Amino acid sequence: MAINLEKGQRQSIDAPKFIVGLGWDSNSSSTGEGFDLDASVFLIGANGKIPNDNHFVYYNNLKSPDGSVIHTGDNLTGAGDGDDEKIQIDLSTVSPDVTEISFVVTIHHADTRRQNFGQIRNSFIRIVDQTNTELVKYELDEDFSIETAVEFGRIYKRNNEWKFEAVGIGMKGGLQDYLNKYN
Image (cartoon, rainbow, N blue to C red; front, side, top):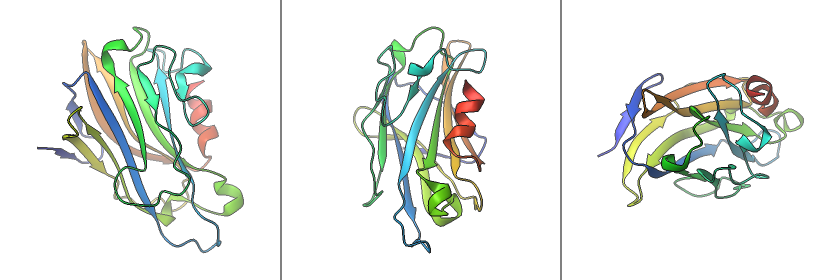
């Protein structure tokens, strides 16, 4: 049975291999443009930075150097129910210099399309095991009225144990804010 988390709550992850599913629905756009949301993953070292650019996994770099994180591809429309984008994780192969894996969702061309997360609803991040059993889920229920990028959640290692944290923190500078933060 899945554990539903609230913002800031943490839960141990006992499965070495799993899928992180991220989902959302868009309200009808007042700008007449469709929404293209993108999931990105930052593999972060103990210093709070990515070891190098290859530790930033997204639609143009689908696999981490150690093969522990694989992005299954970009969903350009977010249409349909369930997970809009999926990330495969294998904690047993995560490089020893990585202590955190952060999951960020951004709106592609948010500034030119005048879009923000206030126009997005039903956002969630969840972890399912190899049998597709949901282990944890965090439904973002905040109204992000100006933010164009949101860190949905993170997995971090403390005392040789991996845990998931429901984060739900947004930034208005888009993906560039997160690139600046982790580089």
